[in-house]
Figure 1: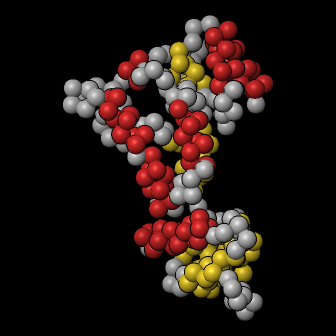
Figure 2 (figure 1 turned 135 degrees about the horizontal axis):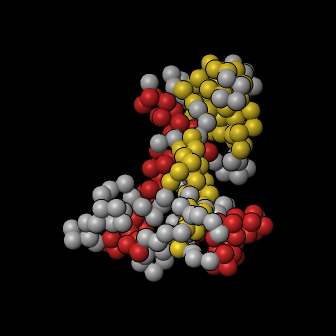
Length: 228
């Protein structure tokens, strides 16, 4: 069942990703799951105009119309895209991505690890879609995060990305600093305010304050709220 659900999601995502702005695509004959209402809609017809779902109906004789692109989802389930609310694009899931916790630089240098991550970014984006994930929240990383966000949101085969920049912290992680640190240590309230101002220039979706104690947090939090 799990594989069936994910396959149906991939079908739905493919239809939205390649629909033209003026074209109409219909996913027909599948079973649609609507989490908002809790309804299960058998033999559903999902109409997509451009990049928007405009209707979901059951047993409609009017949908599809002549000229519509049709994807037959018979025997499959169709779900909304999932949202992954905690990711870090500057990290992979392997053993070499956190030298601050387990230093394996002698086997695979951390610089080489980060270069590999960046060179495979498009494949990482596509893997989210293949898993049925259409939106992700990157909750902190280097300033490169904002380049990554721009690239993702301009790429067809990529999830929608919201991102924070470097974590504002009372601790440092020098092992992760290759010139664009994912964690920035602050020691004074003014440093906290200045870091928030620097991040605000990048128009972050949110600002992350991590592992921090007063008085720096007392300065950074209001500054972050005012920048929003």
